[in-house]
Amino acid sequence: MSGRRSGSGVSSISDDQITHLVFKLQQLIPELCARRSLKASASKVLQETCDYIRNLHKEVEDLSDRLSQLLASIDTDNDQAAIVRSLLM
Amino acid sequence: MHFLGSVELLSLSATSFPLLLSRLNFLLFSLSIQEQVLARMRSPFSLKQEFLKKWILGLQRCRSSKKNMSIFKRKKVIKLSADVAMASARKGTTCWSRALIADAVKEGNADKHLAEKILGPASERQPTEKVPVGAMAYNKRIRSKKILKRSSVIRRTIKCAPQAARPSSIVKTLVGKRRQILRSLIPGGEFMNGVSLIEETLDYIISLRAQVDVMRSLASASKLVNLN
Image 1 (tube, rainbow over the protein chains, first blue to last red):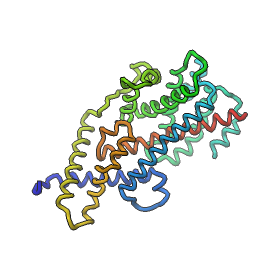
Image 2: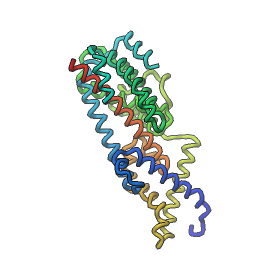
Image 3: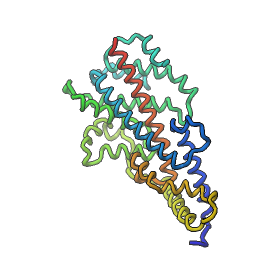
Image 4: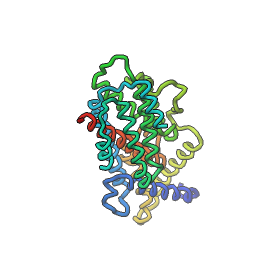
């Protein structure tokens, strides 16, 4: 175990990869983006990521609530569905 | 802001849902020019379009014979069809999307029948293996194991070189409590590790944002229609 360092080349690439991915994650999260700091620590990024995902989940819940109240009915007629479909394709 | 202005100009008087959707789609097209300028990873506009298309399909499949659906049921249908649409927009290319759909139709899930209705006939569905199989995923798992092994080696050998410990601190973060929390938040997270976990997180966040944006646009448009 102490002598076996043969995999070091591959592992350091993976470390760089992870660092790069964590940086990309940082760019996605509005909390960390706004502060314009070069690189937040990985643990900070992960923490903010978890918070951000939880916020997004909550937003989806709230929007589903609002939409269910706003939309009188979700039934659609056949020809109007065809119109919508032809517009989208 | 620009979006809402266009909505007013269109002087929406229709209250029917499909007409609303066709107008929303027109607005999405006009938004697309702005979106394309701002587009970063993987063309967010086409993702929104794909999501909207699948969401509408799912909603149509839930057309019920009884006209008066309870508000509670309606909310469930809207949310479930939105989640399923978001996942199937990925066409089985990501682990989280496959896991989301697999969970939705799992035996013992209370809303299994609803999910199956939304997904439509089996012939039209995407592949839904729960655990990612295949060479790519296997290599990722091997890489993840190497990362974990390396982290334990580093922790044991490096004692007085704090700078050199930086790469391992990132790895240590990934084996910590926060990783567990992140895994619990992402569908199928328990099967992901290291690099694949972060890649899936990136994709999941992008998809969630697209979902929220489209739903929010529809809510704004609906509200304006109801005011007329």
